[in-house]
Amino acid sequence: MFSYRHAFHAGNHADVLKHTALIAVLRHLTQKDTALNVFDTHAGAGLYRLDGDYAQTSGEAADGYLRLIFKQNEALALANQTQAATKNTTSKSSLEALPAALQDYLDVVASFNKGQNHKVYPGSPFIIHSLLQGRDRDRLKLFELHPTDAKTLRANIAQLDAGRLITVHQEDSFEGLKKFLPPPSRRALVLCDPSYELKTDYARVLTMMTDAVTRFATGTYMVWYPIIPRPEAHELPRKLKTLAQRAGRAWLNATLTVKSSKLTTDDAGDVVRPGLPASGVFVINPPHTLKAQLTAALEATAKLLAQDKNKSFEVESGSGA
Ligand code: SAM
Image (cartoon, rainbow, N blue to C red; front, side):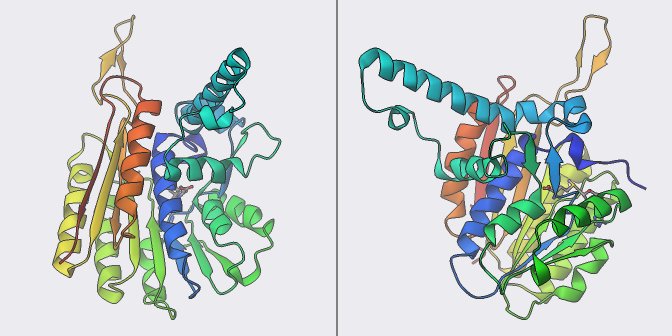
């Protein structure tokens, strides 16, 4: 069984990228009333404690979501000081506004933390559910293979009292997604967010996406991938682009780098691995608004989450015509 637990990584820079993009895509798709089917093929546990053992051990949220909140609060305090000093009546309005998609991400995550000082981080199932509020005809299908996370996910979902809206499937989603495509309403978002713990995941993502696009060409597909020095990781976005182009579908590839991928040595001369330096989201059939939204959001995010001078972002797209 896998050893990957998303609880170690919840709220890190990869989650910031993935969840900012996810929220922006869902905001667009929920503008229409027609029923929407959302498939979260690698759901995780659903909800995470940032003050729990897992998150505290890794400290990854401190360089992700929590850093964004800290910087926002710092800027707010500075604006208030300036206001007091100048007797200016504007306070929050004198803050430099964050790009809309990034602010939306922070607001959605913060909505899970009313009075809790940012101790909770919502995983993709809870983020998706919060954006489907009040849309009774939508359906959210969650796949989670790991028995421990599937059990936690079911318990977390049970608290939502979501009725028929959400179903949890403890099965291999690389196989399980097929039976649901195309969905009856012909409107769907598939989020594919594997841990890539197994090298074979890269090829399985491509097989799953090829099959999905063949069955249901007009769905919106979103794949998260790590940017690490490994050939399979490097090739995945390139192969997804070829898939989209061959199918004549529009695509978008957004990446966020927060630090160098080079190995370093510590004072004792031991090799220090940098941890995940960068990641990307590849979207097939993206909303037409996504490129501009993510470009603005990631430009700000790269600056705010930079861990060294290697920070960068890129948003590339193709029309599929
Ligand atoms: N999407 C989640 C989020 O954004 O909050 C995080 C998911 S985590 C990166 C990947 C999850 O996929 C892990 O919990 C792992 O147990 C699960 N998993 C791995 N292989 C799977 C498979 N073949 N089918 C379904 N779930 C799988």
